[in-house]
Image (cartoon, rainbow, N blue to C red; front, side, top):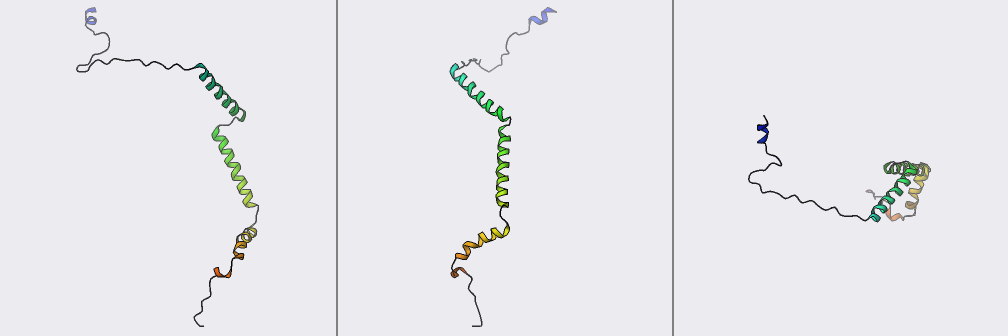
Length: 108
């Protein structure tokens, strides 16, 4: 029974017609510990600032947009329709008669 296992090839498989590829390991770039500590320090500062708000960036942006929209609505609602019409017609009143539509009469 052990004779069957003696014929088994050990190691990686070898393919016909393919040259052996040499595996080269890449060297890892050594990073300065100072840069790593600075990166960790800045990320902790961001986490602390975000931790105080307890909101994600998307939530903060949503809140800001809601506030802006509410202010815009209140500003538009502060004037009534009559005031808006008066503000619109005020510059038109200062224009000369030249811009008015001339009256055309066929019976003259």
